[in-house]
Image 1 (tube, one colour):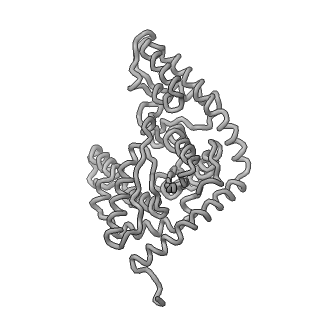
Image 2 (cartoon, one colour):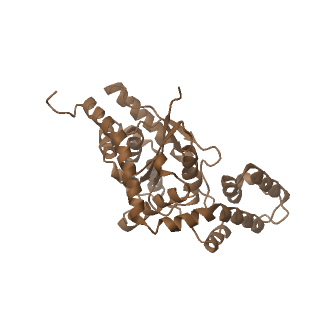
Image 3 (cartoon, rainbow, N blue to C red):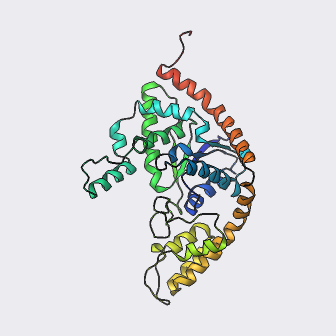
Length: 338
């Protein structure tokens, strides 16, 4: 008898979806959802977006764009649990419960918090916590609640998010030791080839760095973005290192093994940077064409999109409702009648 594994993936709704989201989360999650032994939970992390974004219109529009993106890229919503984080109140309730037994010391070790403190030190600020909100500090707890409220077995993430899943495991183990075996201890899954996709400046592709390439650009704008990718000063004919090339990393994230091998050989033979960028443009334009067309059709009907998310929230609540009742009972939050 086969055992179905529950897999959970989310994308923060803090801007337009980009190639890093597509390669690192969306396409792998859609592919995984086709496995009959997998039960996929895919969500829009709109509460997470508030950590970095205080623009209500951006939060709202981004949620809409990310939802349309998943569907445009081939997600069959009827075969998965596709929902908006804010439509499942049990997540926030669990986040509070978990925060009451999570040590501050564990949160002190979170990479995002440590990076913010390090930046304050570099700027020689008197307050090392200057500009750091409780949302940023508690981010790993909310992520733990996202995962544990559905007792996910597997959480596919980029390399930079691995620590948060490890923290989730620590929090779940602590809860289980104190209150009984309620939570499944999740396993982390790192996409081997797309752990961290580089942006146009070579750093991790991120909205924070403004170095991202949106998925649904026009052909002309896609070409312009690709031509902006930074390269070294090696001339045509000089061998180039694929391992240190943003162009090669982006190409290999979307190309077949044969196509990737061919470009690797061209790098060793000294392909010109302009020619390499043109090959990347042709590959991406071909890959993204159908997604662009699907997306343009989807955004014309926001009511239909909202209905899909509402149905997804109902399915999510069917799973989270019995578990939150069990959690409340375990911690002593229950009625007096029995």
